[in-house]
Amino acid sequence: MRDAVLDEGSNNSELKVGNLGEPIRLTDINFAGISATAARANETVTVWTRMEITSDEALFHKLIANVAAAIEYRAQAAGAYDRLERASTVLLVIKPNNSAELWIDRAAIAVSTTLKRPGPIKAGTVLFEKDTVDITGIWFPRVDIGPADRILCIIREGWRFGLFFDFDRSEGQELSIGDAKRSIGRMVRKMRYADLYAALAHEPTFDSIVAAGWFPFLELMKGEFRSLLDAQEAGFELDDAEHALIEKFDAERLDRMFNRWMGRPHLKSREAILRPAIAAFGAKEPVTVIKIVLSEIEGVMSDAHYEASGIRTHKIPKLLGFMMTLAEQRAGGSDTLFFPLEFGQYLKNYTYAGFNPGDIGRAGSRHAVSHGAVASDLYTMPRALQALLTLDQLAFYT
Image 1 (cartoon, rainbow, N blue to C red):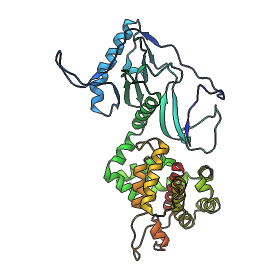
Image 2 (tube, one colour):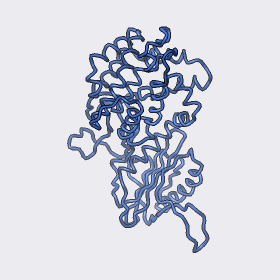
Image 3 (cartoon, rainbow, N blue to C red):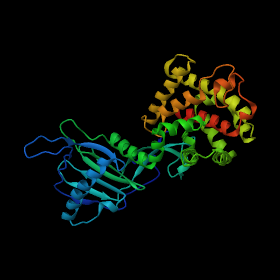
Image 4 (cartoon, rainbow, N blue to C red):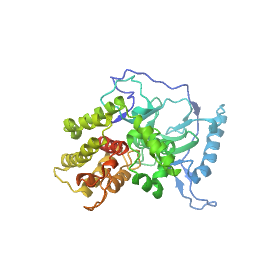
């Protein structure tokens, strides 16, 4: 569950990738930035020298026409004519001597992604979208880009566009390849999952889907959570969507998920406990699933906390805070599809929701279940799946 990308410099690489063609070669490209404010002659002007922005933001549309026109003008002067608005990927690499390479849908692209499938993979392994859960970076492995270069990238995702540039090469300011890679990946991730980001940012929508026990678990990221969200936003009962989702968790998928757990030490140590939970789900025995899994979640978090700090604690607020921090570290930020902050809220408001003895609780509540305060008819397969997916999310984090 780490970044997976072909390392072009590795002696162990079995694949050779190449660009689709040659770049347009330009001269006298002395781009230094984009003005952020208007100014008269001899007045001071604020200049943007680095930016990442998508077409969902109004400022993008104010910038892109001028940026595209400047690049197209110089391409025409070099004897080439390409309308950038028709391109999927535009990469401009400006060298210290102001010569430049303009790549329009010709540069090979490497996507760094977090894998769902357990175990190591060999170069050349065919991966499907269901095998990945996040986009952590995008880069151009066969384009010569160095720390003294300036770059600009326009990239399309569906009906959205992203613009990234880094032009400041004043003394001591070098291009960070790692930062640029992450920035472009972040833009694509936000564009591809814009509707999901919007739903989670809308507090009433997020609160209502959490109240039903659902979350954009990483195992559901490829459209399955969207079906639940669509039903919820339409005001429909979730029964049909939940039933359809449960049917997709067949024996093969459950095995893949369990194998992922066994790759994490804090879950591997619980193999004898967790294996019956997986078997019970396949046998449609939700009581067994819920009773086992909800009792083990706290232990997994506590073990992870102890390994990191050397301190044993079972205080839920402290464990939740720790897991959010750990998830950010694993994913490389708080705005990834790991959604660590939002998952912390999910655990707090659903899995560890407040409970008073004597109340009738929910089957998704660890406290209510442990107190035996849940009616038998509330132990359902949707609640069992939620428990499994909650533990699975922690497997990604740890």
